[in-house]
Image (cartoon, rainbow, N blue to C red):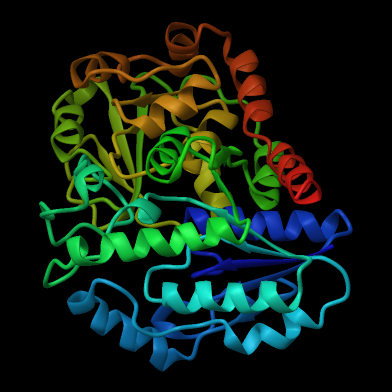
Amino acid sequence: MNIMQFNVRLAEGGAAGVALDLHQRANAAGLSSRFIYGYGKGGKKSASHDKFQCVEKHTPRLTSIANIILFRFFNRDPFGNLNNLYRKVTRAQGPVVLHFHVVHSYWLNLEEMVTFCQRVKAHKPNVTFVWTLHDHWSITGRCAFLDGCDGWKTGCQKCPTLNNYPPVKKDRAHLLVHTKRQLFREMLALGCKFISPSQHVADAFNLIYGAGRCKIINNGIDVATEAILAELPLTQAAGVKPKVAVVAHDLRYDGKTNQQLVQAIMALGDEVELHTFGKFSPFNGPNVVNHGYMTDKKALMSELNEMDSLVFSSQVDNYPLILCEALSIGVPVIATQSDAADEVLRKVGGKTFSDARVLELVKMPKEQLAQQVFGKELQVFKAASRQAFSGQQMLEEYVSFYQNL
């Protein structure tokens, strides 16, 4: 079986991590997989390109730059196609699976991508299509994340914000949403199978495109991170003051990090020690340690392993792997309500809390939190989490899915 994974980025972002891990695990299991990505930082080759086998940068730098500039006015990517892969796909021996992940974010023109799939299917009937939905882009006129908006249910009539990702200068979502959805229906007509790691994403997709159209396969922890986690010892309470972690790429973004809540945690003073991991931390005080953005995953996991808890308050994630990773090293997660947090925590007997309750829980050491929030001793809680978020389980589910196409 020949598999081609498609994602806008190679190694940056949660979707890339899942797609790349699936690619590596598939090759290790004896399947033939290639990873096609749009571009790296600045439209160039990814900094991680040479670390992985069978990966291919797809898009010329000028194409991605043009899309970045024009998207703000068009609300869609006017350029980008897969036509240079036509011969490679149609001349491949045996069945071919084209597995799409994130194709937006200044990479592909959706209409051209669908046309490519139609041409390929007509030429090579044993080509099949799979599309993993890592966000809500498939149901909206423009946005990848809903951020509390339900305008997609009524055709994106008036966008409440131009800044929701991907940001624009002029709102044209209401003009594009019906055409965009028709293109997804054309993919369904080609037999494309849609998957999401998130129940709430699948539910939204099925509401628009029909019951049962999108199946669930939860994300798992990647091979490299699993190796790191296996080496980390279970640590006990950090000390006199509980250490509380807050993790985000950009700590200023309120959608990812509830600024007011973190300020309230800081205001607890000597009762806690707040540790932030990410860029542009606006949090400073005598009980705050800002670690900055850590690119070394092993170093990040080692630091998190020393924490008593991780506070999660994002409203724009769909199946956040940082939660899976923290839980798998035995760090209890204290989360405010969101569909994503509810779904992840439910797998290990956890739940979400009000802001007021969060401020009480962060004062507890990890052993007490494991019992109070998850109803388990710390060691049992860690072992259960490792099993619940196993990447090998994700691969087995996908391989079974491929074989049954």
